[in-house]
Image (cartoon, rainbow, N blue to C red):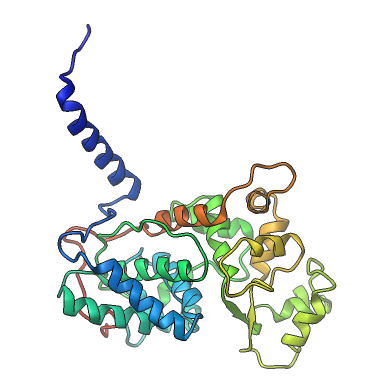
Amino acid sequence: MAVFLNRSIFPALFLVLIATFVGLSYGQGTQVGFYSSSCPRVESIVQSTVRSHFNANPAIAPGLLRMHFHDCFVRGCDASILIAGSNTERTAPQNSLLGGFDVIDDAKTQLEAACPGVVSCADILALATRDSVVLAGGASWAVPTGRRDGRISAASEASNLPGFRDSIAVQIQKFQDKRLNVQDLVTLVGGHTIGTSACRFFRDRLYNFNSTGSPDPTIDPTFLPTLQSLCPQNGDASRRVAMDNGSENRFDSSFFANLRDGRGVLETDQKLWSDEATRPTVQSYIGIRGLAGLSFSVEFGRAMVKMGNIDVLTGTDGEIRTVCSAVN
């Protein structure tokens, strides 16, 4: 039986379908422009705050990026990483070196003056992370908002975070548990294109890898002396070393080229090249072996949107904290 529709309803139907698609794509109630009426200046306020801090210290970009990642992988993207107090997430060993809390607190203070009790700390963190990546040279992406803040923050739960000694299989499983796939894993780890790591996280690779008494054979022999000079065997374990050699302050795809060349600093990073499950995605970002190249910056934004919707609180769940670092 043929069905005829009045053409006048097509525009309205189209908008409904698009709205439905957006809701399904972003998941659990977040949407781009969530604050368009309640706090229309939210993005400009966060952006100017991040720019001010970035101009004073570019290291806030990798700091915010890792903070957002660590927040989302524990209880979802609910700003529980920001809560201060004893035995909270931010006190866990995995989070002890995170930076950028002052950026979020600064933005929150300004937003409370402009739109009291409206914008969540979780959304501020998501927006600030995007803005810091852009300032570091990455491509922008539309950030769905509408998250609410969690009330629970426990240091013990940070043990579920991906670790610097995890095998690729373990990493893949941890990402799958958060509904993220292998491409998401490689793409998000690509955030190591900016920032540094402490020597203590990789020094064993330089001298006594897997208790062999020798360096990790996957390290480029011409790069090894550089790393050893930066991290002497009995030197300062807290010394910071760029994770993307030659491009630590620029958000680009050179991180993946370094993996191909045996110049990954962290063992888990270098494994992205050596493991058959992840190597094809690395190759796609550097366009080798005839594979169709992917744009890392574009795919990074896509993966960040996907990650940013892990187990979010929306609607009447959670709360809108007036102070992001409120003591638990």
